[in-house]
Length: 290
Image 1: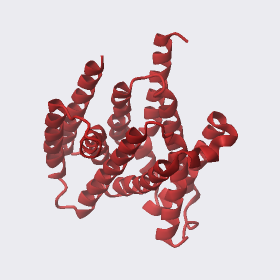
Image 2: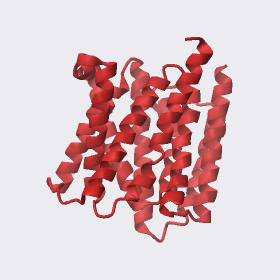
Image 3: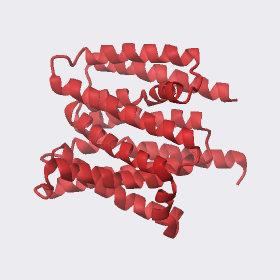
């Protein structure tokens, strides 16, 4: 396949994954009875099934051994990604889809900061400026939520997602050879274990449609990660970071259009400041890579 065709294919695959994952907020708003931990259980289950099918095609019989071959980094990734799944569900059940999405958008900046701390990777002046602007946007956004403890806790949980995923990316950079897909598959079992531990195994008392919605979230998660894995083989990392922003940009749009969840003006202003800062920094990163 010619280089341009490979790039087009890779970009299309990454965008497909981002589109699938962008429906998470809308799907979780369809759940009527299940709590965050029950949703986590069925989401983890749906993701495990989806990634098992994906890995059976891409890794064959080496599906399980590929995880163990990743060593302590693969195990660490699974132990970090699993709780991040729980934090994401908690965030979405306590704060608006827009608030959570805008916070998660800061992942590239948090990753750069963590890489500077632990790997001594250089952080450019533009990245520091973007971090300051993002913090301004977050402060504006959460100023609308201080009277609602649930919202503030939800936003903190969303920051927990960015922190745990940022650490996983730093771990991958430090190893340069860790396959994240088997680790993500293993993280599904960690998510299951967390859900069972918190609920005491009380998972079954859930309406059928809530089970369907929770499992569908897992299917989109597994599909999205599979697409990211394939796409990043053909698209430069900095450009993948831009394409992946589509997921968080569309998440509140679908929640508004399909579930009537309208963000306040304050959330929109703060969120747009965050998206603008992260997008600008991502575009500059692509230009600097050339």
